[in-house]
Amino acid sequence: MQEEIFGPVAAIATFENEDAAITAANATEYGLIAYVYTRDLARGLRVSEQLESGMVGLNRGIVSDPAAPFGGVKQSGLGREGAHHGILEFCETKYIAVSWG
Image (cartoon, rainbow, N blue to C red):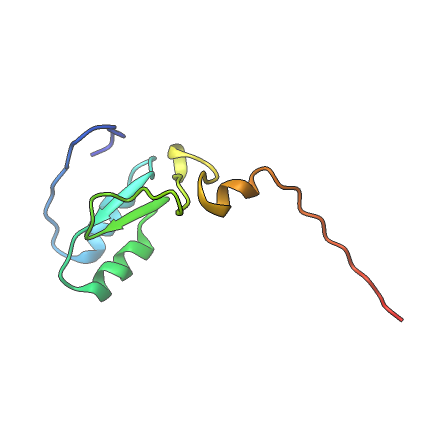
């Protein structure tokens, strides 16, 4: 579970508790996509927020969407493609401070 595999592979492991699962999932230098499957939506959202990945599929297998930002963290990427987030890579931000009157 320490390799970033681009293919139809599902690594399955059991854990004593939620914290152990999160710790194991984050104990890698990669972080493109993580998947969480659960019947408990509150738990799924809680775990999803703690996972160190650019995208999380919660109870779904297909995560990519043209309207959503695509990208990872750690060794799996920097920045985002797609959606308005991808356009921001090509923009220059300017701050203008004004006193009027």
